[in-house]
Amino acid sequence: MGKHDVREVIRMACWDERGCDADMQSYCPHCLGHDYCPADCKYAACKLPQHRVAVGFEILDNPDVDRSIPVKEQCRSCMFFINHGPKVGSGAVSARGEGMPELEGVWAPIRH
Image 1 (cartoon, helix red, strand yellow):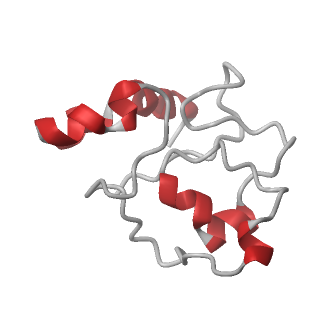
Image 2 (cartoon, rainbow, N blue to C red):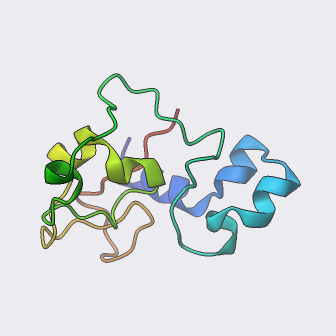
């Protein structure tokens, strides 16, 4: 996916693409502002084989991980993201396009 394609994904609201019901839209943080995809959203589940929920304070409390980057709330506690995601001060920008106008180095949301 080229960076222009990523920009289009960022502009499109997930509920437009997926047809979320009115109840979910009423409290979904994406609808209300720039917050994380809630873990209870039926579309937020990660189906990637490398997804593992991190266990233990030594990995969950890692201060080097930039947890502002992922769109999904559950990515913030994913062992794969914690081990391989962008680090604080690395210059990475969020998948929402915050930080830099060009989307070089984006930890983009993975569409399922």
